[in-house]
Image 1 (cartoon, rainbow, N blue to C red):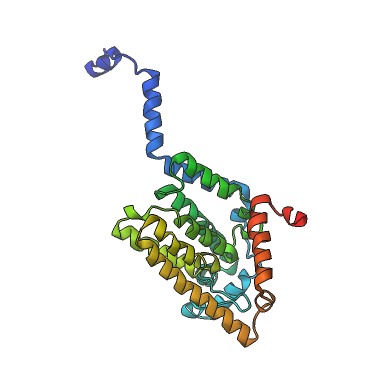
Image 2 (cartoon, one colour; image 1 turned 90 degrees about the vertical axis):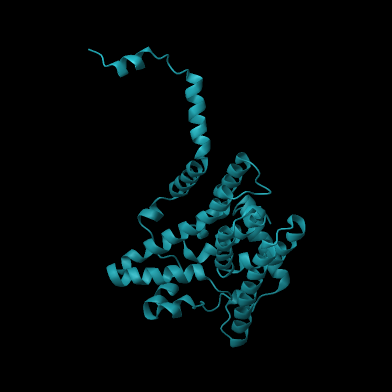
Length: 288
């Protein structure tokens, strides 16, 4: 015996294949941001999964961890490593967390904190690209292209890959992408969220903070008042870094890079390491 409901289903005509394809496409379009974000995370992990499975404390990360293990939370959050000439909150915060983990479960688990924290910071530029309306990345294809550029850039590997010392590169990139975001559609809640993000980026190395003049100038292009507010936040952060720089120079604790700083060498170094290396890779330095 066949139930009436089953018999009714058997009598219905089959759904045309093009309807199924259309339905699938609609579902993909509705969730393309999540799908693309998962693909980005997968590509990041595939590049060097060993660093996530067996993480390490890299170079001067040990100085932040050692300071956190021997000082209180607030002291560590305010700590600025001598000789670098700027403040790096995205190194202080994971150092505090890693110290807590070390005291609870053992120091061998500290690298998991610093490594995965740096991974989370690396996702901020991608989240801005995927979830914000942009004056530059105006459609999904341009958004995907922007994500590919970040993923395939030579600076997305080597020293700045999965360590808290170079989170400043990713926070600087996040501020750069905010230059093109359409802020006129933001809600009050979103405005305050991004003010916190801008502040975090501004106090996490100089790359984001020094963009404040460009962010202020962009107001005259897009006429979005929030750009001026964010520029003021970044300007304050820039003054913080500048104050640390001057204090180190006068205290005699300045490192080689800080003590021997000159405008002409800075221009050359920025061109070599931030333009040539970023676009053409490490071997382009020898050609230059």
